[in-house]
Image (cartoon, rainbow, N blue to C red):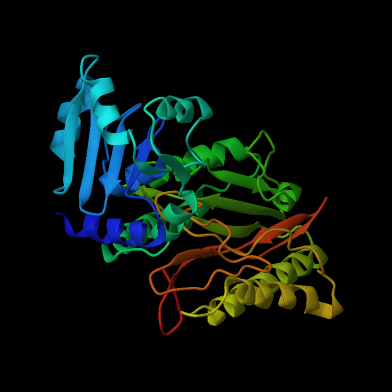
Length: 361
């Protein structure tokens, strides 16, 4: 069996107690855990089924994609071609009378009911176990994410020479994606976010026809993919100086966010709870200039990053998070200050948890 597959299966079944096998079913998109385990980088694999056991995995695929699957197959995954003639027999042998785990957070209800027709003894939602297994990265996963981060950071440096008064947010977002692709990105981790001026106060603003003006904030939140793995980086720039007063106000916000991020990263290490890291950044922002920015940090500090940009447990660093950080986890660290009608600043980096501390990738 492939070493990486063995590590992943061991971790999954360590968390998913009480099931002998786990059945993952794709729809018109791939279950993230299917992608995580097969590591396929091409092919759609619509409606494919991946059956996991501690000793290996079996993939059931259509004739349409059988050869594509065979070309990418990792040792330890057996691939079988599904036909109208063998479909029911094969699924019955896998499911009937068995205790099976499913990814309940992904599986549509109709597909779930379809599985029940094969009379498994019990169906158990192991989505939480799958998430927990995915948040500690192998060395190979870490290297894939590092490359995705390098591409995005390089694009952030390059994009600055394209800032031009009067350009639209949509124009800059398109240019950023072009630059990332040219640098080696296999696609964006998520639709690129570009915010000009007061739109920077909206954390998930979608780029529109807003035009860039002198003195505006430019907030770019973007990511790249490398061999299925994501990066997630945010930078906030200031486009020229409208007035000394405006410049000083905006730089004060930027410096407060930068300091909050550095403080949070200094708290990251194995054994620390995610909530404690979030508190460090949030308490600092709330305390700056006697509470001038209190309650302007309106989202969690960070999330796990991997196959998905919000991977596994998602809100790893957030208020009250009990997630204990472990070596090999990768989390975003993205404090922000948002002032409606004025603008905002967010600075985000992807950070690897180590025994010694947090390492910015």
